[in-house]
Length: 420
Ligand SMILES: Cc1ncc(COP(=O)(O)O)c(C=O)c1O
Figure 1 (cartoon, rainbow, N blue to C red):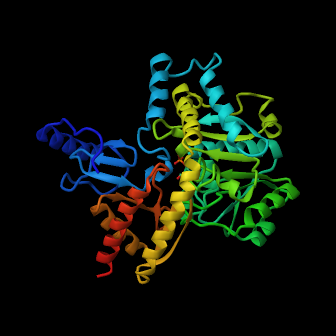
Figure 2 (spheres, protein in one colour):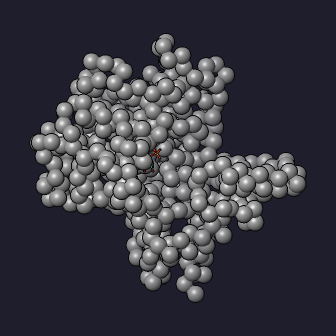
């Protein structure tokens, strides 16, 4: 199942790159406190479709999908073509003239989002999209408070962190914005929390980092109704669920709920160049009109990123990938459920929608061990940030059944070994 061309690097050159990478990581990157060693270092080198290869040519099936970035897989030719063409013409925008690419991508986004959602602010990361949404809600409602859910994940900048439902990340940075946290899926708790001081309720249609948690079917419609009744905006954070991941174009489409503001990121990049957005109605957007500089971003609407976004939307539609995600996701989920039933001591639950699948293991240590066994078998997965016992399976939407079967074989093997 090899792809791409073999790396032309000589063995000494590869060894030098690995050693230099480890040293630079240890000295100059702040990602991990423990120093890395060259022994066993896996240095990523190339990607194509559903595969990532390290510098030695070891090939992984990417079932992590960059935490949702790679809806179209790695280096999708249509996105690459669009971004390269843009790069050759005008890489970044003047910041002063009208840019046709950003405008075209905004139109395409408005065409696929539900209800009256139409206006877009382009930015570069999910957390920025959430920041903008929170500001817009405050500006529109003139209210100070937010309501969010326990174990939610909305990003790590101050505003987004304020509504992220995990003390571990929040406490060192308090005081944050005033936010009430309620259990996800509990409409009564939501009713208690949303009041005349609430600017917005922010929710993920499915909690991703919270352990791939699906709400009851009537939850989002009830929250929608509550927000309308109490004059609070409903912000749906679709950074992870948006653009086909759950087998519908947006997570909210499953319950026919239209939010007031939608946040997008990850997949909007086409897996090629960072792109994110918040998106709302003409009526709410008017809150920005008194001053167009209330909210700005230098790199936000850049033409390479928005070309990637436009190509992503076009490809999702042309290749019927949302339908494919629903079909393949259901197949994957069914097969994983069958597999999990053989290992009740290891796995408590398998759940998900489309190609956003969570496997709840007995505990975090078990989850880590199973993920490590999959890594040994060249399958990339990871735990969910706020529920480490849940392994997330989030492959590119282009994954074939044949490749799903291959992953299932390796899964079965990994679980068999772990159960010994
Ligand atoms: C639902 C959700 N919102 C926001 C974010 C933050 O996105 P970013 O890491 O691009 O800032 C994430 C990231 O995982 C997410 O899953």
